[in-house]
Length: 504
Ligand code: NAD
Image (cartoon, rainbow, N blue to C red):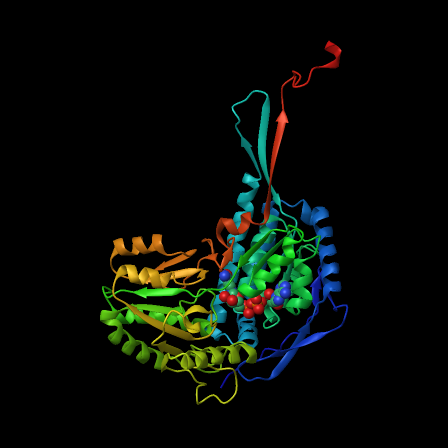
């Protein structure tokens, strides 16, 4: 049985360094997806709260205790946040699992990544002090120029539920490192740990208004943030459909946006692999980790025909071995889907695939031993053609669809046969082939002989319908900076473009 003894904190909105009740006093229940029980609630912000938070953020930027800090000073806050996250790691991991159904092992790993990300951007904040003012040699005597890197201003950060605190951190850490003041709007499906980040910021003494956290519904809290005239940029992670809405709202004010959206990523497996089991395990991890609720999930297996039968046999054996249970149970490797609506959506994808003529080779049902909770068996679907919904649309659940290929050319065409462009994986021993695929894949992330490992030093994002801009890496910081060129005329002589009246 699941053993935990962590009370769900009851929080308000985190605005201006304080807990503040939403203007409309509305709250939203928290449902544990493993049990379907209501385990608490959280505040629901509306446009009125967005206005208050934006004002608090603007004041923070105008105050010396945040607006005039050096990168080195901001790094101290980021490191203190990282330390607090690690101090509370076991409690936060349980809260994350209770909230979104992620296995406890994965929640704990996420928290390590959260702390590492704050540390990484602390390093970049310190390095920013040296790059803040960069002279540019124009090879001219009459002009002196330099480039300034300054905080962009007030930024709105809108995030999804699949990695609740980690996705927030990918935006909060670089935004604070850059010196911006931020308003975070986490997903209404998993907000608990993001609110705890507010408590951590309060405890480490982050200046009021530097980070504000507004939980609530997308249309009620996210939309007014996207269209707010005093928010200088929106950094969004979520579905392509919502991303398009955010971009439309921001476009009315010519507000810059970055969009990290969904995917339908391929994993291409060649018959030259050394070890079938190693490739099978990466294929499972690539699609079933976090119950398949991963934007980069490699959910289209493209397997060379000559090994397809042997590979699928092994894949089924490994899949049968996956422990599906309450995410807090030891050795659980697959927890529930985040919500009842998402569960229904995943089940509909599976039944549509069946109706379109695909074969459910394994899974496709609720696991028989789990009567409650939003559980879906890990599912493998074959006899898929490229016009089927299951081949084209992001499922965001533990559902793998399979196609075979004969030639390299056919494999690359299948891999790129998607409107999305987030990630691709290739499994092959042939280094030349891996290089050819690295060039040919139309995505922002390439994995060679693995799938999913992600490191905060590397830029993360996609092309095509997967969005544009990058989180993480140095690019993840640059998107929160305003670049200002400064040019000084240093010559004593007149410019002499116009005729001087004194010479008439
Ligand atoms: P979603 O689009 O439903 O919601 C994302 C966020 O947008 C939430 O905070 C939501 O409240 C908010 N929102 C909803 N309507 C809004 C509106 N009109 N205006 C402004 N904000 C609004 O996405 P989700 O279901 O939470 O997350 C799953 C999606 O996220 C998947 O498509 C997945 O691929 C994608 N994702 C992408 C990445 C990446 O880095 N590319 C990472 C994780 C998840």
